[in-house]
Length: 80
Image (cartoon, rainbow, N blue to C red):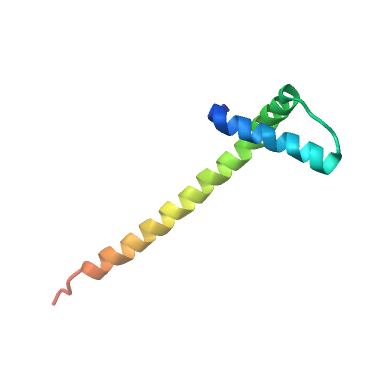
């Protein structure tokens, strides 16, 4: 599964990874190493986040459909 992110966003994330290594681990990590780490995480955990997003979207659509069903039922006219 390919997760496409813009070059600007990718650079921001790479900078964040480098800052994390510097602040939390007192270690320096280069651009290439940070990019490879990002690619690894995108490949390994990206699909989990994607699937959760699909699940959340499905739940939202189902809630809206239920709400629409209630609204449509309220429009019915009584039959004598």
